[in-house]
Image (tube, rainbow, N blue to C red; front, top):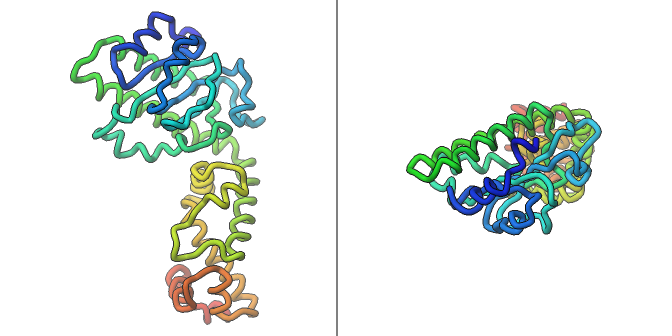
Length: 285
């Protein structure tokens, strides 16, 4: 890892000083480079395994070669550890490019540090190679090809991270399933308390707070486990609860609509018919 990722002082200075003012490779073992982190930039930090993985949410079924944490501009850690390296890039780098159109797909920038990505040795080699390609491009010098080439390599890195996070969700499947049970239980609790209104944009924050995870991680986890985002899952969960109430036969449509936070009895009946292809009266029978 040192040969590829740990930048020499000379290369580190090049990465920080010139070549391109919107993408930097930082050697975090160098105190001067740690101080050069810009608050207006995105930050991808590579943490070596020698520093211990627990601060970044390591689980017993995770890999241990290294881990990556992702940080938004003005949301950096208060203090960067003096180990590993970082890829730092300004939003202007990918403005008006194809990467800008899909950047919102990389939701892991909204994860907490305890939801970091833990890499296998093969995955780490892939990351090292992409970073090495970035460094080679930075050393090439600036011309009209520099920005698209850097954006292309940055997008490759982000796509690999997206793939590796999907793998991590898979290797954590048993743990995720336990968390999914908690998601179902807490969602039902919120729905039955009338805390989720059908006509309003669903706010995942209360549920994420109860589960002590970020809203972005919660949404991606639910999407991985169910194939639907959290808003769609919540809507379908409401219908499942409504089915149970209808089958029990103790509540009217109006009572069910009020209990689950629907705007009106008519709205509830129409939505139930559309999503289940049956009426509330037929379901009771």
